Image (cartoon, rainbow, N blue to C red; front, top):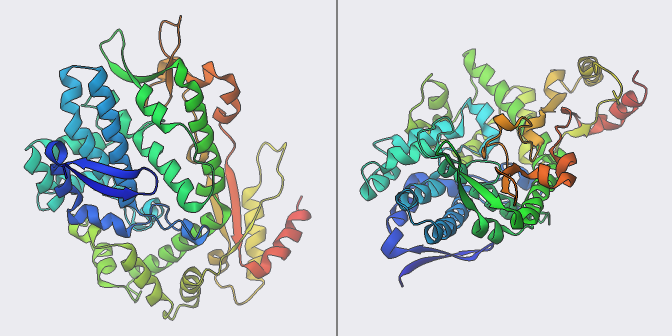
Length: 441
């Protein structure tokens, strides 16, 4: 067969042309990319949605599939050298963009004190990695070019290439919204992705910059996409149960790290001990920490002599969640007293001797607006770019305009909400906490 065919539940088939893009198979088969099979795409969301067991590798293949279609669309409509030269770097970047993710994806970044994009760059540029060697076998300069495309701080390449990978409407989002919707069973990820890919245009402005825009006929498909993001954020990505387990895991990890830093025995598995023992972990030390490693570590902590660490580990493994309690209604208050309310909850928890120390069993989850706002463009026109806004080309307008200025019904979705704050306490204290909330002044 002229193409390597991979079955996929979203696209039915994902094909890699052996003659033109066969070098991608060596990239795909590198240990660094295969490791993504062992990284959950949605972190601990499987504790809320049992079907959410899909991994970062299948998502990366999906992004590659969409980027391949996008490049075929651009190559058939723009016959210039810049587009032709972009094919290999963009296909490679689509496949490897998530290679730096750690266990449970984004969840573990604060636990390990890492940033997955920084690690992606390091892994791609690591001379000893099989991934680097596979990229270099295609072209000597390809590893460095791909690393620059993946690095969000690097601006050396044309903006349209960067923003096909990471922007308000990119190939990454087009895949994960539909894929996450499919595997969770939350039926929100429906939008006309095919139209979005095949109507995209390259726009050359007066300063000889080239950006991505959509024609006015794609406006309704863009609207579907934005609302899909809105529903997925509020129903899946920020689900109260998922966030509760995330806070529990972060708290457990922080407590064990405190023991380690003070020289106490934390029952560490070798890979985590090695990672914590150096201020500058190597690529090999980072890649050694997988979800299996973390789950074994949590299993070890169920035998730790610290009662709280032992209990948190057991709760995580056996899905004995903490219960969410909303804060009192501070509507109309210029300075909501979250600190006072949090202290009252801690005192409630402290009144029960089995929950010691109380701060471990009274967790606060603060979600800043930018993290749960699905689409929030810059409002000043001079500050807008295709990185932070979706542009459409409208007949009669001299320049492309931001989508919510064309579809004004999107305005409520694009307004920044207030900070979202939730609290978590042991389930048997939930009714007491709710009673405390009802009498809070």
